[in-house]
Each structure stands twice: as C-alpha cells, then as structure tokens.
Length: 550
Image 1 (cartoon, rainbow, N blue to C red):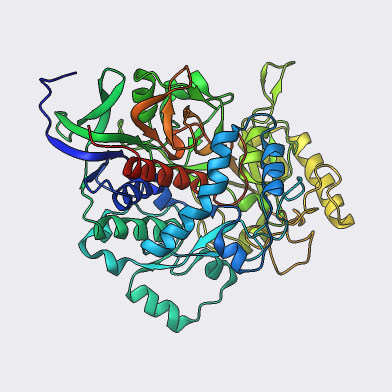
Image 2 (tube, rainbow, N blue to C red; image 1 turned 180 degrees about the vertical axis):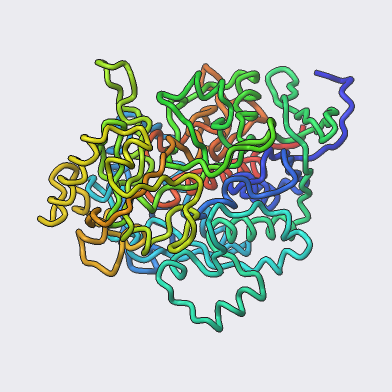
C-alpha cells in the first residue's frame, strides 16, 4: 500500500458517476450505515443519461403492480427473460434483481422523494414471448417532480433529450389528461416528468442527506492495497490529480463506453454510429475495472436505439448530437428501407430488438445489408406528426430530404430507385388489405400501443398507413444506442468479480458500467434503469451493512 499516498478527501464510500444507478448507490449506502459518502462526477452536471431519458423502470413484481391487482409469478419472469437471452443469464444476479428490484422500489417510495406509478397497459417489449405481460404492469412511470424543490441546484441537472418539456408523468403527457390550468401551475413550479423527474427527485434525496457531489472530477484509476481497492485518483478541471480514499469501497457507475471509438470497435458485434447518451460515457469505469483485474461480461451487446444526426460539431473537440428515433418509424405512413430500397424489419418493433436487425451481414457483398438505412414518409405524415425535432408545418430540417417523387427522393438519398418504388407500392397494397404480410407489423399489442401509434385509428391501422401523397421525405438514420451493456461482472451484492470468480474487495459496479444482468435482453420500458438502479441499491446496501471501514 501506499502509505505515502496523500489523500485530498476521505469517505466511507466513493461513488463514481451521478446517474440513476450512482445516486441510488450513494443514497442507500448512506441510509444503510455508511454515513460518509461522496459522489465524484466527471462533468459539472448530475443525472447522466438518466436525466435525458424517458426515466421509466422495468421492475417485475413491484408493489405498485400488486396494488393495481396485476398478478405476477417468478416462473413467468424467468421464462420471459430466458426467452430473450437463452442460456446467457446468471442465476445469482438474476435472482438478486428479481428479489431486490421490488425492495428498491419500496425503499425509494418510503425514504426519498421518488414516486412511481404503473404505466397502465404498457406491454412488455416482446409481448408474444412466454411469460410476457401483454397488458403491462412491470414498467413504472415517474410522477412529475417540482424542480423548485432543488433551489439553486436545479440548474445542475442534465437537460432532457425530449423535443419539448414534459410537465407531467409520461402517462399524463401521452394521454393528454392535464388541463390548461394544471399545466400552467406546473410550469410555474417547474414540474418535470420522465427522466428529469427521476434524476431531480434522486438528486433531492442526495442533497437532503448532505452527500457532497464533487463536480468536474473525472475518475482515472483505482488505488489498491494488495487485492483491496482503497481509493480512486481523479482528474480535476485543471488536469491535476484529486485523490479520494474509500474506507469501505468504490462504486463504479460511470455509464457505458459507447462514445469511445476504440472500445466500441474492440467489443461490439456490429456498428454503433449514433449514441444518444451523454457524450461523457467513454468507458472510464470499464478501463479502471480492467486494470483492477475485473472479469468482463456481455461485452458484445448494447442497448440499441435508432437515432438521427441533428448537427455536426462546430468545434473539433465537440461531440455530435443525435436525436432519438423510436416513435417516427412506428406511426402510420412510415417505413424503413435499406440502400436497395427494401424494407427489412417490422418498423414498430422495440428499439433494442430492431438494433440487431441493422447488423445483418450480407456475405455476398461483404457488407451490412441494412446499413445505411432511411426513414421514408410522405406529406400526409409530415402534416400530422412531429418528426424528430421537426413539428408539422415547420421548415424542413437539415437532416431531412424532400422530393416530388419517390424516384427523385431515391436519387437524392442514394437509394435504389426501382427498389424503393416497388417497396412502397407493395407496402401500400398490404395496407389496403389490412395486413403486413412481410413483417407482421401491427399484429401484437406492442406494435399498436398508443405511445407509438395513432389512436385515431384501430389496430392494425394505428401503425399501418399509406405512403402516397407527395412530396416525399427521407431521413438517414443511425445505428444508435442508449448505452453499452457490457462491463465488469458482479455477484448478487454488486461486488465486482475477478477472473477466478472471487469478489475484488472494495469494488462494486452498477448501471451500464457493469455487465448487464439481463444479458442482451430488454424486458420492457425501463429495461436499463430498472436493473441498473437495483444494483446501485444492492451496492449501497452491502457497503452500508456488511463492510467495515478500512
């Protein structure tokens, strides 16, 4: 050890990162007995990708679900998750998620300002698989949270990725149940929903406990005494070392590695061209864990999400901004095509599963058959629906191409014109006949869920619609991701394991910085935050109750 290390700060527990998993770890560590907790945050803002997201949590058998009278069984949960990642799930961590996820939700409800409710009718993402909840219950939505409660700290929460502020819960926003007076009052008190509500209410819990956040402290390497992790060396805004001793342990919750091109190329099984997470997710935690001897898992997978490049950076060091692309493709009158002009997927499928379709490899041409790919819509669609950041009636954004005919649009985009015209003609014929014979779009409850489709119509026309009114539009799409799904493997207490399967003393991981509990599976809305925050809770609980100071 490093008797000669001069610590700039000492704490029982040091949490790296400030997203949902990180703040949950800090809060639970404090409440379970580690009174001296500190958060090291790479940027000047808290919330990570959690604050930018929809903020939902997928937690089977949660108490809100039971109170709503929605039955659940462990056999159904296991059957469903095993069908999404056959033979790939670790029984210990899966069991910990199933047992402690509901406990974490109850703890947050009892001990923090975080409030959830069941999102009525939101189906699991693969409702046709065994054990799925076709009519919902496992996905939790956030109650709106007033940022006035944060006072001067309100400006320290990462902004949303949504195109407009949401003053209610997601369920309230999509169902339009808030009247104008309520909306006006919520705007005055700066109520926010979705990931803003989750990050804001968790941050309030951090502040209530007096847990300090050390901003602009980028964790760079772990300090060990023999096999035990005893601290971390961070880099401050001026590039100087900032050494923090961790008497009980360090929690790595720094997000994934989707913004690190070298790591993406080294590990992921297919191209990732447009991440929608915070650009600080560069694999810092992964690199520290590797150096500490951590066993890795699930490294080839990501939580895939389609995206659109909104703008290229104006400065060399800046990162591009990618817009979420999950709703537009599922509405009536939209299809996705590859460069041959052909459809290749059910456009209303969930974003994580769809991401895998983008990695289909054509051995004959030695290329990814479905990359690049484009969203195709017509004037009827553009007049009715928002398209990424573009609202109906607004000028054409820079990322959208427009042409009077499909042939001219194909030439502009670099798509095979004959292929595109034939595809649109076939699609329109199937729409008129009331069934997508090619990809069965509109056949299940997820495809027709009102979050994605148009409730002006009955299924399958909530998602199926004609493309026949010029001019026509194309948007080049990206193979994006919410985050990567691989990292150090943990046990059921969120302790990081070495290559022999033994815990590395003093080292924990949670969120997208750890090997995903559900493997390549994505159970439903909140499929990353649910397991991520559960393991943040487990890390904090173990550090608070089972670890003495060293």
